[in-house]
Structures are given as structure tokens and as C-alpha cells.
Image (cartoon, rainbow, N blue to C red; front, side, top):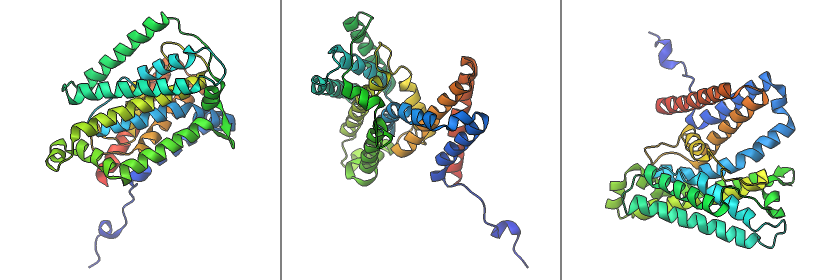
Length: 319
């Protein structure tokens, strides 16, 4: 007797590794059909340029989420770095070393403070990073008296808007950071410790891994990358206010979740998180280019976020 058809017909199933690329391609096709100007070379270049700061933040956020945390201070770090970048009030590049040094020092200090509160004082990641966000906001407003201003070094403008071999410079920087982060997490012993700590902190301690130290280093990585993203973003915008990067703290978390990074820790990759960020940026760009009202923009963004996240989780579970 022949076996039932269902037992031998191959079942069509999309690999979890292809879910995000499929969503991305579908989004581009639909957007192009609805609004052909969406697929123009100029618009696609603008999308790539706009995506870099958020993607850099998402990579750092991924490190923190992998160890069961989150970082709400990233946007405030970006805004503070933007104030630092313009405080020298020069278009020359002489102050560039000081700007980079101060920005990275800020990121280092914020990351260590966040990590200390979470690891050593057992403060919840939400409250610890929310407190740091508030402290940075207060310090920034005190320094600028609510009215930041100043000129930006030419090199930072090039970092944010320049092109090399036809590709945005900030995109090339993003790809370099992504390659290092992906290699570190997937191919090195310290990177594997991040997954072990996030997957089961108790088991990590039992096998001799200092989970507190790993967690603290992840918060440092997040803040340092937020500082780099702040320099890229202020270079792209070309001016500064006290709210540069506003919303990146939530967008970076949402993008990471869309990319399959589990909020429960121990699962996900920076590559997929970046794809999640690109999906968000494409959505933001599309709703603007078709001229939809703000209310409709928010609704469509929410629908895309929910649909992409739900599809990934269902297909990943079924695989």
C-alpha cells in the first residue's frame, strides 16, 4: 500500500536564517510597487546613510540583551556625545582627537556605571539605565543651558555624510563594527561566554565563568558603540540639540527583538539584529515618502514590527 501523500511530500518551510531577508525583500518590493520613487538610487543611498547610527546602537544593545539586560541610556549617550562634538566650535579637524577621546571616555564611564549598578548593586537593568539616562540629560541641560550649539569638524561631517567608492562612509564603518562583533560572539571563547551567561547565569558560575564581569563588559560595549553612533549621527545631521538620537533606545530594543534576539537572554546574533534595524528604517522611510500623516505612520510601524517579530518567532519555533 502506498504511503499517504503527507508522509512523503516535502514540506515547504522557510529556514529561520532566511526569515528576516525574506521580510526585508518583501517590504522593499511592496514599497516599490506602491511608491516607485522608493527604489530610486538616491533614496536607497539615503536609507543606507540613515540606517548606520541605529544599526551601530543595535549591535551594542544586542550584547546587553544577550545577558538578559537592556540599555535605555544609549540615546542620552548619543546626545551627550553630540554636545561634546560641537562644544569645540570649530570646523577644523585639530580638535578631532579630543572629541573622540572624550566621547569614548564618556561611553566607557557610562557603561561601567550601568554595569556596576546591575551587577554589584543588583539594580534592575531598566531602572539602572533609566537613571543613567536621566543623569546624562540633566548634565547635558546644565552644560548647554538648554540651547546647545557650535560648529562641527569637517571630518565628522564626512563620517556622517561622506562617500568612499560610492558607498556611505558610515555604512563602511557599520560593516566593520558588525564584522568584529559577529566574529567575537560566534568565534571566540569570550563571545561564547556571553551566550552561556545569558542562557543560564547559574550554570555559567558553576563552570567558573565570572558572569558579573561578562555582564559588565557587555554594558561597556553598548555604551561605547552608542558613543560611536552619536558621532556618526551628529555628523549626518550637521547640527546639535539636546535630543539628538531621541527614540533610539526603544528602536534599538525593538530592532533587536525583530532580529530574533531573545529578551530572556542567550540567543540571537548582531547580524540579524542589524537586519531588524534595517527593516525599521525602511518602514520609517516608506511612510514618510508616501506622505502619510503621523498617526498612520505610527500604526504602520507598529504593524510591521509585530508582523516581523511574530513571523520570526513562529517559524523559528517550527523549525
